[in-house]
Image (cartoon, rainbow over all chains, first blue to last red; front, side, top):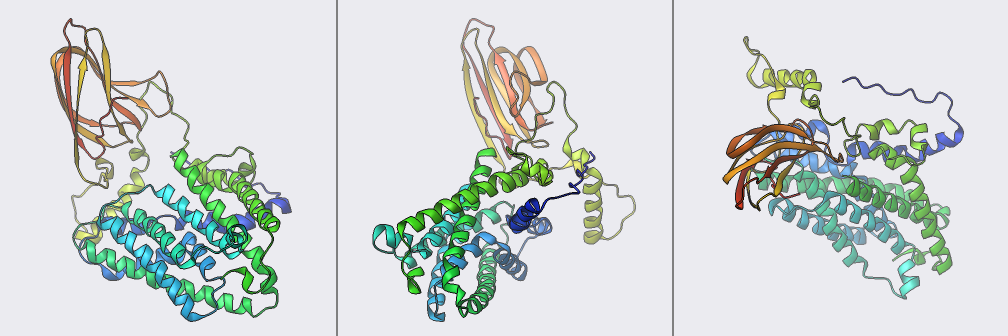
Length: 238
Length: 219
């Protein structure tokens, strides 16, 4: 079967170029971040026995390239100014997603990947609204933020589990491999978090931060809605 | 902690406006870019203008149904050169170069998940027919065995996804009470049997299938 790419339109207006620029990130990352890349899949299905370093690497890679987890993490640390607070929230998030990652893979609990990823999209919208003070404004109080991070962490963990469950993993060495994957996820999260915090640090020192905080969280919410729509569409067409 | 740390809590009106704006922007992005690129759904045609539909067109979800009535060439054959090249590389890495080795990667379709067994019993009243099906993708298969308490007419066949009133027959008998075999799906769809009882007494049909996707069901 031959497959020909239709030629790209040669004359593209600035309007179209704008759309491409805005969405390049989404589409490009969607192509390789959702799920595990092809070469990794071959390895995962053919390996047997303990491969701690490799599974750790794959866990870290999944987290660093997993834009849905990163968006949520970005929302969580947006208004955290002290390292101690960041550590507390990230620990809760890690506890939450580790619990369901291990429970899902080792307990053989299968959840629908599209629905779980849709809920992860909801977690991004939730955190953006929370940051904007919407719940405080609408209900008169801010729902417990630590509890929210833990509960949404559970869903992120199921999301991680569904990615691993797409493969036929050898039962030989499974437990230690999954634990290594989990450790990798945490390492990748710390790495990504480091990058986010450095960028946030520079941003916060600028006077414009206060003005841009509203717009930034509105954009974060937009990304969350796109994730929800993307996953729900997948759920209904597949 | 939230935005009220460094400014006044935004008004309800401003918050609703922001929420509405982000939902509208998200919907716009979804319809013009994400859905065409990811699923080949392009209601506005903008995805096509951007050339993004080439990504979605390659996805399996909303593929246009193949013409009914003929067995299509399986995708395994399409990719056989690439698959055999990958197999050759893997063989050399694992065992070194060996003379006398030829390759046919299309002979096996690897699957994830445990081997399962599925059984179903159907009772056919006189003059009535019934179907038992399993949902299979191209290249997936099952080993089957069925018995009937009396002779029945049988059409073993498959139907493509989203195609109505058309099917492909694999084996047809006017009167049969037992059959066994190995089946490999030539296309994605629901595959199985239609039995009809031409006798005067009710007939019980028991089907058994072993495979990776043998979820026998009555459509």
